[in-house]
Length: 238
Ligand code: ADP
Ligand code: MG
Image (cartoon, rainbow, N blue to C red):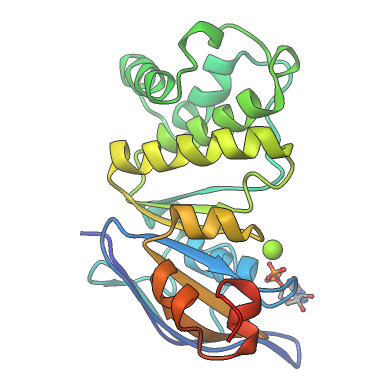
């Protein structure tokens, strides 16, 4: 069980409160999308869930466990960033296996997991290439592969497609939907792209200035936005 629960979660940097009391329930295996203007706190919220930022106030539960002070490596979470640095001197296979090797997994286990990720992401023919010999979309799939091999309960994606061109984004969107079907994990996904949010999300969370403005299914937000702000992001004009 890997649902998440955030209660009154806050984050301050110095005197500035950038996350101002977020309450949110995410069901096991749900695909949740965070949208909102630049600077509203989407990345900060993800980084707190991942354990890359300390939570200033409130509680974070993953499953039944309070995670506020749990080490990032013990949260069952893997994060895929917008800018993902692959190791240029390593093959695709080595890039995907590296973190496992680092964590002390044995060779058979690493090989098995890399093979599984390569199958899911259709990277099998490319396993011996280096990043420099891949297209942008292929490189992004390798970055996702590095997360998949860790068998996380929860995937966090921070604008993973925003550096790709429009055509590739459409393709990757379809891939991500398929990935969610196949992996059956909880996904929290940040995007600027309204179409991405509408097509991928079970539930959309609209953020504004460190707070949740509205939560709902794509259809609920589209048909019945609470206000002009939400309408501007997702819905039809009210
Ligand atoms: P988003 O991802 O929605 O664009 P962020 O979560 O990156 O927004 O940032 C939210 C706010 O927190 C912004 O005002 C940003 O400047 C501020 N912020 C983010 N990280 C830091 C930090 N390490 N130190 C100080 N302020 C930060
Ligand atoms: Mg961000």
